[in-house]
Length: 419
Image (cartoon, rainbow, N blue to C red; front, side):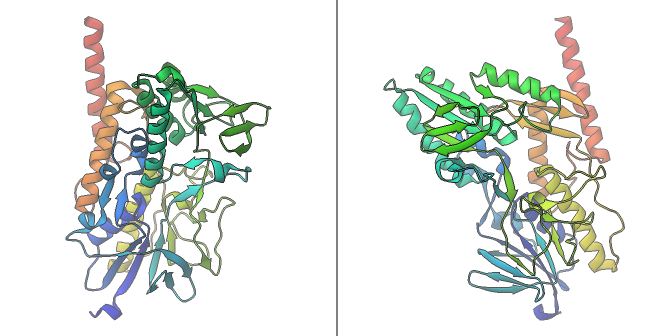
């Protein structure tokens, strides 16, 4: 079949959703009848869940960049490194900075961007952390602050937002600072608008995490709303002013701003509204998954923007698209996913979380995190041909691994009691 008659499946974005979808599809579809095109402005896949370690100096930027060429090597995927200008849904065309690409099926998984809630000065006087590049800039600032602290100059570092990103960043930065000779001259402050850290997380994880943060010397401000930001100063609505050498904004995310004409339905924070099949309402050949997609779960609430959700949606959609092109069947199963595990990094090598409703921390949480990362990478490189389940999944393999993990955990806890 000639290239012109092949069905074109175009995937926008090479984040967790896009890269996993493209490699899975390539292992399922016939290259003689379909063409998979992956588009991203970068030529590398970013391990976003670890960028706080770049900011704190425990990883280099290059360690978290995986060349897309290495992930698609030997697979029938055409990669285009280009910036996306807009999508013309009527003409089934993607307008790039230097050309156009037609599509038959389009999957938009461009992720999210920083949300500033229209707070004056927030986008001007704070630093975001939405990429490896952002993390590298923060790292440079931290190194400067540590050097200046050696001259007995006092420094405040402020992190706005006590969600997972803010907590992971703050705890890793605290370790870096506490290892410096002038740690007493630098203070980390986390500002949270609600009454607790980690909104939406289990209270046991919140309590354990807050205990760890305080042990690291981090100050947490609850119920603290930011009124405005000026250079080196954060103003709270309760009248408190915090002078700071560095303000990092992790308080909110919104959908990546992509121009789609004619317009499709989006949430107030820019996420693309999709149905239970990952399709947009107006165009059934346009899908969205990952952080950019606003999909309701069986309880009627939106799935949170998590990497595990993005990967699971990618696997689901790859199966559906493959079934349609191979057997001509439309999907019958709706996407449904229950989060069985959540692990948060609270330092350079420390983790806390839940697994099957059990609180985990220490070596066990670390083992779960490492297992998940290793399995994800193996799944990427194999195109999903290996056992790609992990402890975040609801499949049989995952539950067996969970059982083995807890058996080991129980055994070692028993030894501790005997000692």
